[in-house]
Structures are given as C-alpha cells and as structure tokens.
Length: 337
Ligand SMILES: Nc1nc2c(ncn2[C@@H]2O[C@H](COP(=O)(O)OP(=O)(O)OP(=O)(O)O)[C@@H](O)[C@H]2O)c(=O)[nH]1
Ligand SMILES: [Mg+2]
Image 1 (spheres, rainbow, N blue to C red):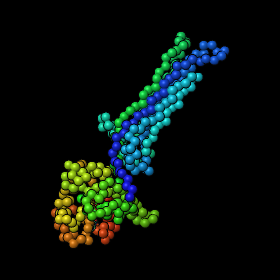
Image 2 (cartoon, rainbow, N blue to C red):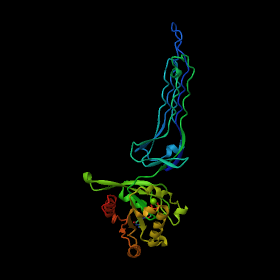
Image 3 (cartoon, rainbow, N blue to C red):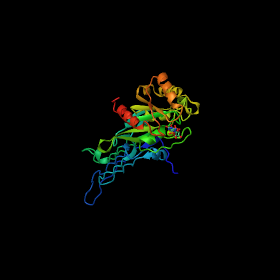
Image 4 (spheres, rainbow, N blue to C red):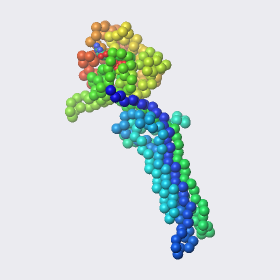
C-alpha cells in the first residue's frame, strides 16, 4: 500500500530574487551627436510568498525542496530599457500553518484563512541607470547602481491542524474507531498500541440534507504516562489540538489489559497540564468507550464517583451512544452546552 508521509514541521531557506543592475550607457545614433545617458533601470527581484491553500494538506513538498528562491530582476539595458521584474514565488501551504523566523523565533504569521498570504523574503530593488544622475551641469554621468540583493531567511513552518474537536486518549482506547464511525475519515484501526502515527481529521455531519451541519474532529496518536518526557510518541502531537475549542477524552472503560480507567483519566489530565495548562480549561467531554465489554459497567459507576465527571457511555463496536455523542459534541462546539 502506498502511504503518504505526514510532515508537520519543516525549515526552509527562502531567498528573494536579486534586483537587476542599472545600466551605464550613452545614446549612440547617426546624426545624434552626444546623445546623452540612456541606461535603463534594473528590474526588481521577485519575493517569496506563502499562501494558505485549501487543497494543500501537508508540508511534504517543502520538506523535499527546502531551498526556495524567487526569480531575479533583469539588468537594465541601453535605450532606457527597464529590466523585467522577477516573478514572485508563491508557495501554497496548508491552512493552519504557523510561520516563524528561525533566527529569532518570531511569529511572522499564522495562515488560517484560505488565500491569506505572507511575504517571507523580499526581492531586491532594481538598480538605477545612469540617466538618474544627469543634470544641467553633469551631462555625461557614469554613475549607476547595482541591484539590491534579495532578502534571505531561514523560516520554520509548523502545521497545526484546525479541528473543532480533538480526540485525546491512551493507545487502544478506540479513538480511531470512534472517528471512523462518526465521520467520513478512514483511519487505521488495530488492537495494538500506536496504530495511529499521524494526526488525521474527519468531518462529522449531524442532521439530514438542508438541515445538516458539520464540524471537524482530529484524531492524534495516543498519549501515555510521561508522554511529556517523550515516552511513547511523546506529546508533540498535542499541538494539533491546541486550536480545538473542545476536547473529547476517550477512555477504555473496560480497563483492557489490566488498566484502570480512573488512573488513565488522571494520567491524561496530567499530560495535558504538562503540555499546556489552559488545555484543561477547554470544554471537555469524557467518552466512556467499549461499554459492550463485561467490566465496563462497574468501572463506569466507579469512574463517575471518583472523578466527578459525567462520561458519555458509547461502544464503537455496537454503535450504541454514537448518535448522542455526535449531537453532544455539536452542542459543545456551538457553546450550547
Ligand atoms: N469491544 C470493543 N472494542 C473496541 C471498541 N472500540 C475500539 N475497540 C477495539 O480497540 C482496538 C483499538 O482501537 P483503535 O481505534 O485503533 O484505538 P486508538 O485509540 O485509535 O489507538 P492508537 O491509534 O494506538 O492510539 C481495536 O482492536 C478496536 O477494534 C469498542 O467499543 N468495543
Ligand atoms: Mg488510532
């Protein structure tokens, strides 16, 4: 099977095009003695521009082509001919890409809305031809300037997915199963830890035809204890749900493989806190999954008592509770709950 690599952070070297040189030239024509200076100006160099594009979903092409250079301006020519301006290099990036200057880590832009642009390396201005120095007392100017060099910068691009709901949970809790049941996405599902290696987004539709409304849900690789120290796949994937207004914490309520759902919940809370404390302030729905399995019912009662949360019982295996889950998430996304 052909798999597509998901690249969510790259560094590129962006170089604006150099400006063309101004021309030093004098008009030479039969019957026109001392025709005067007529060197044209150089063209401006093109700039490197990043544009948020709906049809681009990964930074993979920049990963393989980290050097991006815009066209240079043409040199000025005789007969006052202006050099051609270099074309801007417009690079499409996925919506939700943060752009930072690597030298000082300053945020240059956060390209969220499709079509928004940021210029990351300005092209150099074209040089001036010698006619610019002509005055009544200075009829034969030899002065002219070279084109400016284009700006060069090292830029870091970080893709942060834009989803309304982020799914958080231990490996094997059933996050991908849940996403595949409620949305149009087809994530890989398997009974071993860390099946999901890349974040994936699905669109959930609630209602029929004209009444239908939708929101997006992001599934990220599972978290484990000490993910913030790099255990498992680490917590770096949490940045993909940083922008989600709502989190769904998926718990394996059966406690498969001797795990304790209450302990799982506490570990997850801790990992979220370590990553970014304000993630705990997001609207959160606890999803009690695997309710079809034998231990789940007792565990749920204990879970309610000990964590003082109100988990929503579901089973992605049988489909029980999934419709209610879809509408509950919609209410939370719309701030109705
Ligand atoms: N019995 C039962 N099994 C389930 C349920 N939900 C998921 N599973 C099983 O649990 C296993 C793990 O499911 P996944 O959806 O891959 O789990 P995940 O949370 O995405 O795991 P990672 O991608 O590794 O983080 C699979 O074998 C699923 O079939 C459920 O409601 N009931
Ligand atoms: Mg998964």
